Image 1: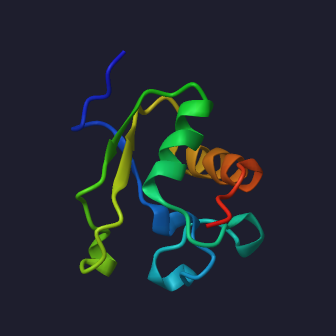
Image 2: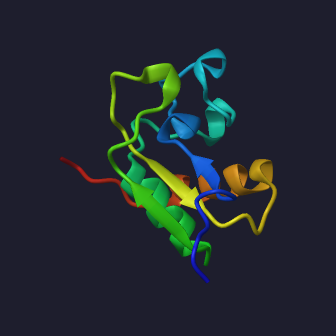
Length: 99
């Protein structure tokens, strides 16, 4: 199944970033957040949950319009809150680059 961009759930890396305040767009609790997630990391986490998704690197989160951090479009199989929690849990267990 392919992802329909019109109906897809949008996941921005800022939703999972420990350095972003809740008021500025973080969707998960600090204990579930990771420092400096990338769109690639969110994409890999969603893929590992068995969901179809599209990675769009040229997009910018509206609150941080000057940072083109990218976004991930995910098929709407789950409610957004459930999806965000599952992706956050997956991001916590993913190995980080030491660069």
